Length: 279
Ligand code: DGL
Image (tube, rainbow, N blue to C red):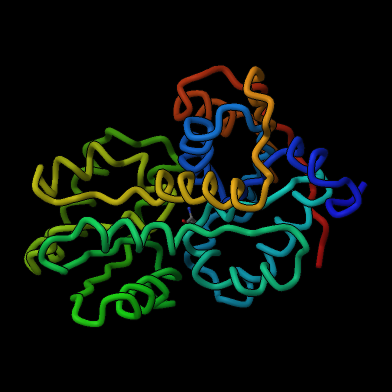
């Protein structure tokens, strides 16, 4: 069964594929389930190879092609790259190489930040890979050349989230180290440019205070996905059904399933461990 062979009506009933290096993409799953509750989701967390944020661009591209190929084997109608690092380095390649629509997290986040900033001073926190790519900076400045962009790599945050240390004092200390320099630049908007970071939203809020606008890349990506699927006539039109989530991981699934339950706030079927196709 191939995406194109099915016709519009059948294609709309196929699941949405979402992938990330680990649990971070679950923030996108959570947001997509809220925005599109009738859609089935197939999720892949490449937990055997997390983090992607410290890998070279060519490795990130290779891993993300394998992740996308895996989701296509599950007959998804669209792929959401639930990872900023992959969106930064590989999105154009995935769009070119694969036949389904592929959506990333950067453009929706940038648009939301530009809509909300009052003083044009925008902070970005992400992985080393995302910050090094300058993908957010370029996108912001191409839309608004007079903006001031301050980006900061926060490599310790992904392992802390993968460990489940969401409200841990160590995480709070690390956040202070990372965020205080950005606050000194008088940012009024902060893009959480890594899909792991919305899980730290409350802890981040405590450090930056109430005034700074937090842009959650998962929420903005879910809204963008809704809009694009509608434009492509790929929204599931059966409004009576509740979407089903099936998660796959590349390392042992127990810890992932436990964290997923906690992050999604609902029961989920245990994740299944898989081996990805090598490319
Ligand atoms: N959650 C991912 C991102 O948005 C990846 C983090 C990582 O694997 O380093 O960048």
